[in-house]
Image (cartoon, rainbow, N blue to C red; front, side, top):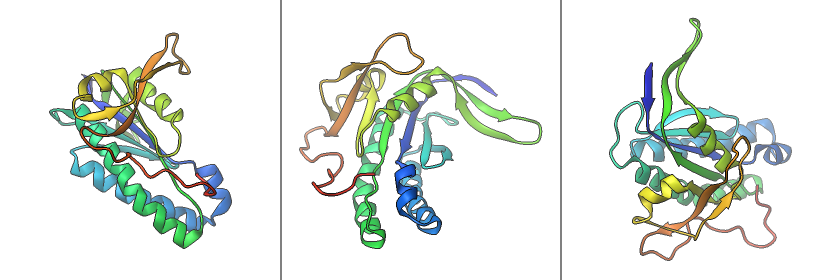
Amino acid sequence: MTPRRSPSCSWTSGDSPPLSEKLSPPELVDTLNTMFNMITETTLANRGTIDKFIGDAAMILFNAPLDVEDHERLAVKTAYEIQQGMNEIRRTIREKYGCEVNVGIGIHTGTVVVGNIGSYLRVDYTAIGDNVNIAARIESQTKPGQIMVSDAVYAKTSAHFRFDEGEDRMFKGKSLPIRVYELLGLAGASAPAVEVPKAGQNAI
């Protein structure tokens, strides 16, 4: 086990309970696989590691297991490109199944424990620690199509991306608020990070 590393951790999640109510099991599997294929390809293209898929969520690491220079920027870049990729997937799923799919993404960076964790019968390479939990908590408060980052990520990436002014939020398991920022787009660009569902569409 590698005792300590400082990766960037992203949690990407859709909203599968409402989606599972509208789609048959084969349709749900097709929808999730379509999203996960794009998420995986985008992550690998940016030197990230897919840690795991849990239901409709993906946990993504940067700077683990291998060193990745500028990993905070690559984590935010990956999130931006995932939301761009979701624009086409959203249109495809809408045409095939008549429903709307969206994802929210939360990103944090900090020291965690990484390595092979499990029993002697089965182990998984993963990251554990409070900073992993913070990334998941940030994602849990995102709206459809949003990318939210912690103040630690903002400090490393604000020269490359446009963010809002940020706000302090309380998260489960934390005694003090954490300042989070919404990604608005690339630095110098005016296009939004994701297409906003039009009025009358059901965002899932």
